[in-house]
Image 1 (cartoon, helix red, strand yellow):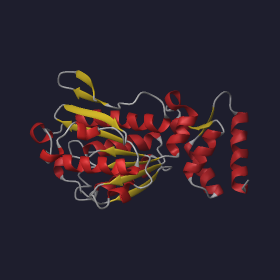
Image 2: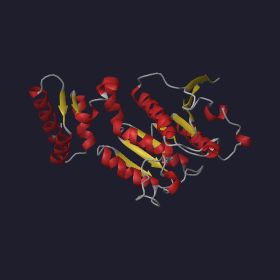
Image 3: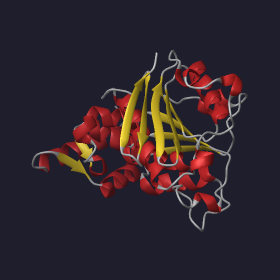
Image 4: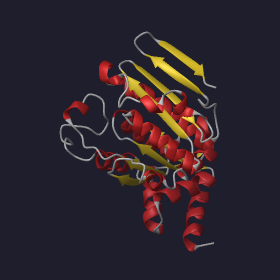
Length: 282
């Protein structure tokens, strides 16, 4: 056992002994230990969780995913493809949950029409690359999360390389051809895809495994429009928040093995009418 690991485990033991009930590790203590021992903050948090000492920042996560689930998140890699309306909120939620490595893929820059709904888009970030702004945001929210940013558009040629290492991919794209391309890449890599799309007050979510029909069961690839109904209905601020929340939960369920997935079905939500419909797919 290394000297650093021995020192960390001894400190965690002392924290357990002086605590009354559940032992917690403050953010300041986590940073101090990482700096003192010369190890990544994420490793401090993982070791603490395995020793039943909960980093304070994850206190409210433990009731649903537990210590083991939190370790699984910190040890996982998730690729988010698209850093706009859906992607920004997905990235935010996964960082706050403590997913250890996020791969961000998007070649776009923030524009004024993004200000109404896209996390990371402010009057000061207009013109900047979306993935760069959101990588900065992640570092501000959770310093234990590693971020790999790819300021590039997903193509048939680069898709599998950009997604390499991810256990799950998230579809936060805004064009139908790109969604199908992403689905094909995840099938090649053998990883699940969490799909989400929005238009007006409506949105849909489903989780697609490599062997599932997925988006090809919904769309005719031979007669595919570039964009969906959002061109006509627009994208109000709350709709991407609503759908991205479900996408985040699907990713967490996939990584922790807890909960029932939206697999071989599609969940459709209409915030205008208040109707939620779950449709089984063959």
